[in-house]
Picture 1: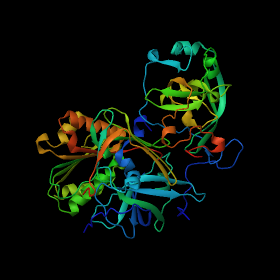
Picture 2: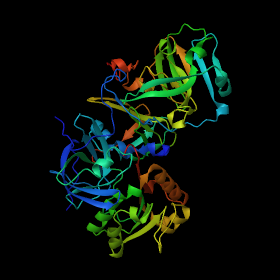
Picture 3: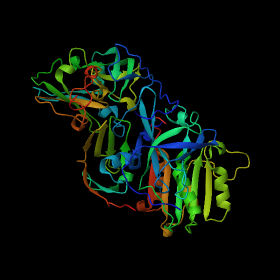
Picture 4: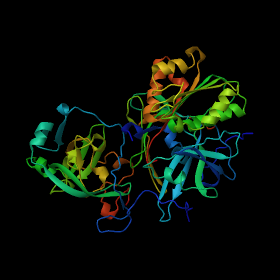
Length: 250
Length: 201
Length: 91
């Protein structure tokens, strides 16, 4: 049962890594137990702070992948080759380690069950993470809203949560998943095989008359392209919420 | 005592002290891109560099005119207030001494201004006597837009925020006037050797 | 990394704004002092690869907020934001 996210002073807390789940060759989920976690909404994130032995500190934001119904804080992180933080989180961190974080943070990019409008989720790469929290929340809360996910990845091996998405979309919970693989496709692939464009968006997006709620997340260029396509198709800007991930050091 | 993240080392930072590295800085081997806004894109045919303000006669050079002036290639160390330093960087540009050569002025201060609205202030003496250039090449190649191309101000003895990217001119003034960062916490002078990062430093 | 990837949005400074305002600010409505357009703070353009956080209007690109943070000191320029409207309980 989700508790309300109480807005208190934003303080740094220590979460303990209970488990590391390898999602794809480059992506892992860190399952954290955070004592006194006040609960969170789907779409929110945490700030993670790392400190080296010489005192050097750096900080990154990561979206929470677990839904409000889950008492654990799950962070799904993509390892960026030139990154400073992501190769540590995906590669070095192991169960038993502690991670300094603060949150939950964010109020704009949030979806709550109870909003029964049709939902369109558009994910570019690791932009799927906050949208997965929304999908998991939608399922756990038995929401009546209809959800469509358009998920762009480079190749089938890069698709995060692939099996879980397949199970949920086959499970009659009102979720439809559309994949596009932009760089390579397995033989027999029946999904889309190109970058997001107007035609794809027209086929997947809810009709305008449904006034859907739209959430787009991914690298800036992807978000701007997707947003642009939807606006051109006649969607109202007020229906669309976006969250841009930058490769700011990884 | 801050919590230490087991096994975290951070990006490669040379923290060994060296007489070439100012206090609080670490050496990096890439060239980080810092930006306060979108990268301006101006056709070179429209580009000019001007010296205006407290001068008897404002001066202006088109791109072609600037490129005809004597230029030099220098190797300098650069220091960013965000704590990274990069040693032995090679630039080609026109010295401010060349540009100021025929400028008559009693002004003591300058504000450099750039496409996109960025400004930064300096005393004129920080621009003269071989201390500053309008640089249009980095590492022997035309300066990349993300690093300030087609041309940036280069003042290596001060923190790199003073080396205004996409520079279009300097306004000479009798009074010091804080620029973009200097108006909002950053030190008016910015000497890395005295660690003048913020107001009051 | 593409140049465009350096441009983020207000979600990227949600934590910083909570440090300053002690409230969730990404749902606040901000009016650009330059062009008068109103944007949710979650939607403004944010540049973090800089000696501070630079917040620009998505419509006219003028600076709406400039935030510098060092240790226990903050410097904030809000002159580019004519008005911020928000609720104390955004939920």
